[in-house]
Length: 224
Image (cartoon, helix red, strand yellow):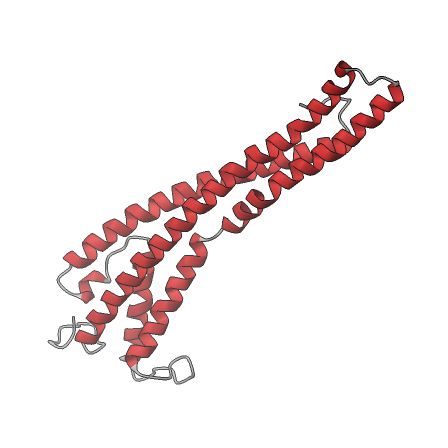
């Protein structure tokens, strides 16, 4: 792939595409593993949460997952609001339901940001890799034509070799872009599905909190 006849621009483009490919596949592998773990933990947490007799027991479930962190944020608000030292500021302005909704929504946004990590890189690779390959090809063809002119030969053998060699850059650029684009679309769909799942869970948590008058059971009959 890399020969002495290739111009410096072609070699730089090819090495850059190789780096892009390594980064792309690293992100793909890491995100597949993370999404798989999150899915399993979320499903396990969801099952144990709804099998708990009340919210006081449900919050004791120790499974690291987005649903667990949403529950933690909701419970933290309920515990703070039930105390005499509840904060008084703009964030805590409004009804209990409004504040709890805000807390849950912010946590969902944090989870979405975590899920979207790396997607910008995939999108950038998918959109720029073909152009980098094409750029390397154009410069390579110019370099090849200069060499052909210097040799004063326009035979098929003299033209086909150098020009064909530079076309590899375009092919590699497309080969790098395709997995990045496919992975981006796949992970973006997973992000949307996970976000919808978390929104449904937060709505259910909010409903439980309203039914319990925003109190966590500590032995009294009003809590859950």
